Image 1 (spheres, rainbow, N blue to C red):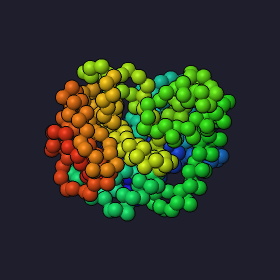
Image 2 (cartoon, rainbow, N blue to C red; image 1 turned 90 degrees about the vertical axis):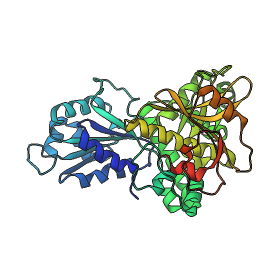
Image 3 (spheres, helix red, strand yellow; image 1 turned 30 degrees about the vertical axis):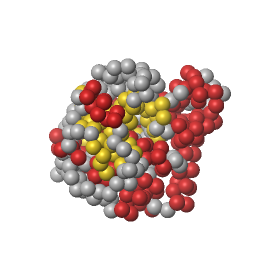
Image 4 (tube, rainbow, N blue to C red; image 1 turned 180 degrees about the vertical axis):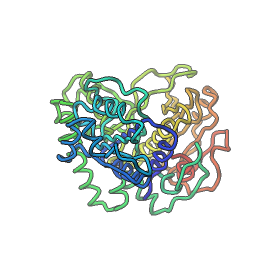
Length: 401
């Protein structure tokens, strides 16, 4: 199926000369998305660092790559070159900078990486101003139902029930989701885990405590959607609090998990405490209530990062909790101002949380939603409502990204 990011790349090359950086988890579809750019030009080139012959071309430097791409040859359209998994090259930043500075007027450049491309600084000059980063996420409800996203908020559209159930059970990574088979999904998760720890983290971070990090990752499946208590994790693993914090940052940099900080602005008696933690692959979480919250968190993170990467504004995602134990699961901000609150419930029978109205009054957020996973789709625009309300997850998520 087509991904929304393909349109984003097309629009980028119509408007900008900067490089496209595609960041995201292993097997989320970055390579497939980059290869779709082939239809934008009559001359398309692809170099994968993991392929020995391609690696040999890259190592020889910018001029060798230019020769490979025939950049001295006139063509009907500007050529495109993809550097896939180039971050594994120890001098990748200096190489990319040099190639871009020499040939930016002659070729469009796409760079992909399954670790955060702005994390591993191996030397060389900054790439500031030379690229725009687009963060690739797993498939979501909106990607299923909308061929193209034209606005910040979409009109609601119903997702087929079979696709909805598959998303919740198998996660949003394309291959296990589209196969929708339990045995395949289990084997795929095991293989992805091996590649993450035995290849990516080992080779790129040079870290020695791989066994302990794997234990930490396993524990995090049981701590998803909870505030991190670093001392508890340290005691369970037999490591220091500083080590736990460092390892979680490493897991974040490889898109295994993500953390959300508490929103404290204009919140009386707010807690300036540890963040909450979530997994990129919510299908690994067994508890359905926890999986539900992680499922919604992943959709919200995808939305705020897509809107930010698209240049619509600066969006962020937080949670709210105060010293009186009042809490709302999520708050989305736009240009550092509260926009909407989200409380997650698995059942539509749950009463409307009074904390939504309380924190809406404090934050002045435009909307306050209690999102119910089991509620049937309703074809109404949730974002036309400005008072706290219970809404279907199927409707709400179809209006995001």
